[in-house]
Length: 203
View 1 (cartoon, rainbow, N blue to C red):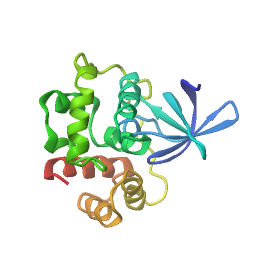
View 2 (view 1 turned 135 degrees about the horizontal axis):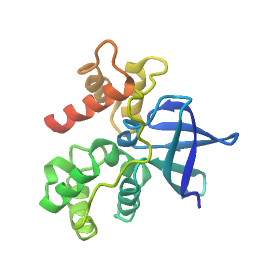
View 3 (view 1 turned 180 degrees about the vertical axis):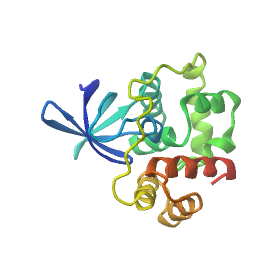
View 4 (view 1 turned 30 degrees about the horizontal axis):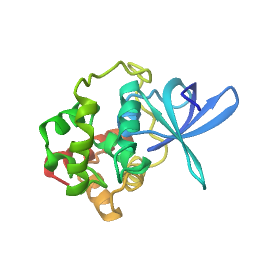
């Protein structure tokens, strides 16, 4: 089991990452909450990881905090929640906010996340409540103060692709992104604002 990686960021294309660890390139998927804290390409970072082994693939997921990884693992234990939906949930809401939604039984807020319908939201509340009663945010190990995230290629196109990868329909992704995109914004900044708008407007 690969539990942690420290290496150089070679590529950032949300939600995908390529990290060089002593000459070996590791492909990972990471929630946007982790992407927001990553340093720029060609800088070093460290991530907590979780490996998902399937018959047709081995998928590695990276997280900036242990709490994010713990929540991801707890989400996978919920009936009907797979790695892609768990990643989308983590991308659309901070861990502490998710814990608050579960404790307060906020079905409406949870259904604004991609892949989460009313029944799934109700199931999340029932199955996650006891696991999150003592939730607290732990320090991120991926943070790099003062280092803006890199924005390879076209930030708008990258942001649209990221939202599609997180589970939004192409027309929704395009609408959300173009509703917030402005000159000079990185793809991560566009994605953050788009997801905030979705949360405020109810998708």
